[in-house]
Image 1 (cartoon, rainbow, N blue to C red):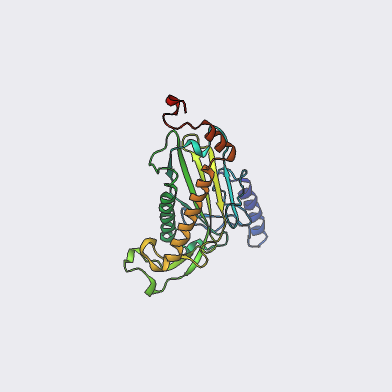
Image 2 (image 1 turned 120 degrees about the vertical axis):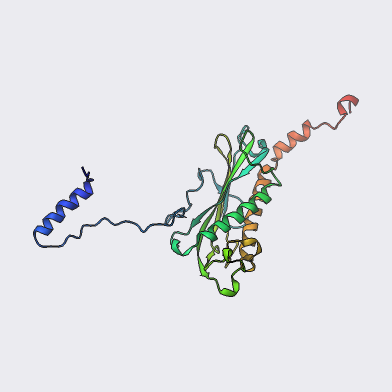
Length: 263
């Protein structure tokens, strides 16, 4: 037996009435155009993408130029000082709300995600050793590239020699921002977060499936490296001791052997 929902039943009855009167039925249920699998897009009019678990604690950070918002937990038991390693998740990519997803190749999205993940791993390793498995005292770094758009067609002369790396149309990252959070890898609690909407890559395009050796993608590489550096700078700043903590640390400091000598 076929079950009809309330909308379908109403349409069916209305269509029968119209057909009996000799009038064609115009009762249709509009469906949004299908998106390519795995594609994520920012909802129109939204300030944030929804990627982070929590945005409520974010505040402007005067240490950074532009529109950076950050948060770092000050909880005595759950703060950045307590952790000794970090797992860096694969980076996610969100399209601009008005971008035509059909014109953005999966290869360019994947290339951007891979390059930025590697840049983040290199950058944060100065603060935390990068590890492969979650566990006690290990952070989980999640990051997303927000607002990629359709770029121009890639001229034959600008395509890489390796056909597997070539793309027909570039992906524009000129207005991209970054959303990042560090979670306790066991509990999932948000320990720190950053939303960086500073435009760093004006005119930059991802024009190959391999950014590391493609000249036309140089500006994109530089933009991703700069975003990764800003994430590292945020971590370095968050790990600095406050003046009060520094005073307590200085007061409790004893040089090696001082206890024995009485000095």
